Length: 267
Length: 350
Image 1 (tube, helix red, strand yellow):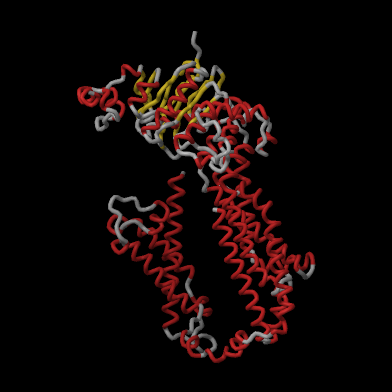
Image 2: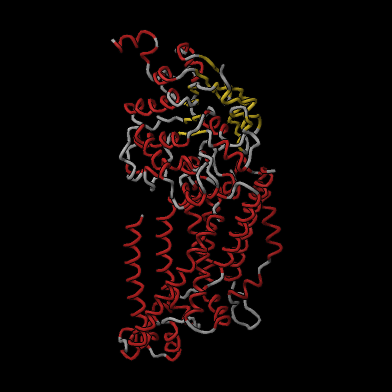
């Protein structure tokens, strides 16, 4: 029997003065899913993700996280709920001047003692856990480097390790590979997939590339102008649905998955 | 509500500019009319200022401003409108093609002309009467060795005075700057209130000259370098809060989001998301401030706040230009050295 990781009901977000980012979105994410959200930039994907962990406050609607209401939570309760949600960003958002190790350790801020964290002091157990997390993303031994010395792909893997350190039950990944060289995208996506498959974390991820969607998603939803316009399985997702969502001017990023052109390309 | 407020703002800007425009025209007309004042001489600029018809002009400006709104379609957007709303029309034109462009250009010309008269610029005197100042210049280039020793001692005091003022200012400015940063104080009404209070207090503190602070502290703690330290300290706090908080406002918001998302508390978000980003620029500003304080402390000494200015003032008053020359050269060398050192250090930090 599956449980709901996230339930979103009637979610709307209006940025002042009157920019409608989301309109009446209903969405349920089952535990263990790898849900991919697609849509043009400006369609509301990032806003949807940030409403779930309340980096942005919704204008209307309610959100539940593992059965507990996220909307309306404040102070310590909001922080406790947030500890259950790891987030991965397009721009990595590491603390550039801190070491890789400290960046990974910052994943545990929600549960560590205030004074210790303010002095950047962590217990030996936490240090070991952070080293193990780095090991898992293939960056063992890089802990002492300053974060901004690493390449983009490596920085994003540090961000994955930070999420791993946090031990959340849900991962929100906002275009995690959009700033990376196409050749490096799988190297990061593989680790996010591992969080899903091996750690049992539910993943909500925004993506653009059709091949990545088909490779990683277990389910797919699409936003257009802030409304949920499509829901389906990745194998049902074809060129027509793509144009439906992205508009007739758009071309799938990897055309070989659709129609005859692609077959020639793969041949 | 928002639209109404914006329109009001635009109207006030237009009204003010038009009134200034008309006032300066009247000022120039009176100045060049050959009108004589109560003494029988030509009216002075100050007397002219008293003759202007402020009430009538304000009324006329209001009429013109409202009139502009009526003829908007052929004449184009007014200056205040463009200032408040920006010109986002599809065909944004070069300034020479718009009425408001010419209006602004003329306004600047008028300001320059009026300024010339009000400040009584006398180019001919400036260019021909140099000989009256030769005594001073001769003294400055022939420094006297009499005050060299005392000057050097007080120079050391000056540099330390500036250093102590800066050092005392750092912790207070650091703490206050977080409350003075717009991006960190949007959350609750309490933080918005703190923002307003800190900003206002710092603006007031900063607008009071260090010289005035020195006078206050001299009566408080007595004549001497400590009064100077306190005067520069107060001013430095205000200046550093402004610089620090602007730096905080320009940070990359990404790490703040990332740390917030882990469930971290406000202090943790500041420690991890904000502080690492602002430390290098803060250091740089602080060193720069020390540099400025060295320069300012010479003036502080004029009124009794310690430092080299303390012995400079009486020699200026007595016209001992040779000794003044010595002290000025000492100050110049110090300021120059501080400037180079602080630039080098700041280069390395950022």
